[in-house]
Image (cartoon, rainbow, N blue to C red):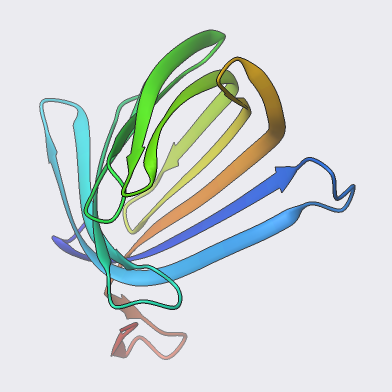
Length: 153
């Protein structure tokens, strides 16, 4: 996998809306792997503002963490069949967030890494929603059907 990548992150929350609320971003990022651990960085623009949140994702076969810094600051840790607590710090105050991970599935090939996470989310010990994250990390340059190099970005 190349250093320059294209990142797609889709989140789905099942709470009050039975069909779920979907959030999706697609953005360029940087990727590297060291000692069987994967590292991904990308910026996320907060909708309706000029604020940028910097994201650092670290993962291996058993664990994935997402550290966000900027408008909001948090480190969310996902470990299969484990509950992790963290403080989600916003300009409006801090929330105690619980992440109860049911499943993490990481599939890696030469040009693409796909990650699926199923988890329950609570805030201040009150269940908020059951959630899914789907992440796809692709080389920013790929080969099309005619064996021609093309840029995804």
